[in-house]
Image 1 (cartoon, rainbow, N blue to C red):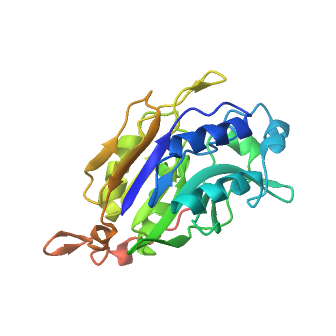
Image 2: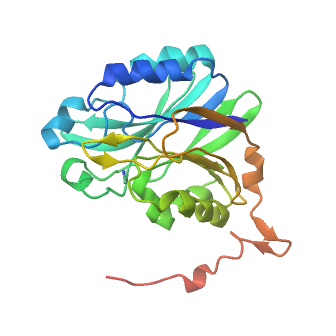
Length: 264
Ligand code: ACM
């Protein structure tokens, strides 16, 4: 199955222009699961909640309307971050758009720094979605950026059967890309981490989007300044095998009896 990512630098506030740029970058891509960055059409560095509010939209809105013919014509599953409005609340969400135009949502659980002033923490839990491309049927989980520093959502998704975790990011700290090697090994899953690149309102993003295999091998990692779409062939069934030696199944060997803690 073909999977990959699109790394670029959105222009803050220019949703229409960013959609056109992404459409052009995706031209020629077919029959694949492609992951875009967090908040990849609005930009990230909001001055205040009002500014975010003017850029947010409902999940089924102009962004999904624009992308739907692209996924339909090219048999693409697209994962992308969006500022999602639900009534009075604004979520930092990740959307999975299918070639049929069906949309699934995960809302970022762990908000980073100033995001706490603008967004509501996610309420979706950690769902796993079925994706079919050609003869490949695969279970996909979605996470967003700072979720990386918490091992729990990755473990929950893996225990629920996720084979690929699509991780849309706007990373500013230098640790995540290397940390994802451990997350992949400890859960034996594929991880696609898509970061943006460039600078926005004096915040610099660290690029280096990547695809990591369940054994921690990096299938693709691009540079800090790279822009484009990269895809690679992967076999999601590799993520079914949780054995690290012939006697160690990392799920069966968990000592759940020792893991109970009471912390206030
Ligand atoms: C982040 O969560 N965007 C760092």
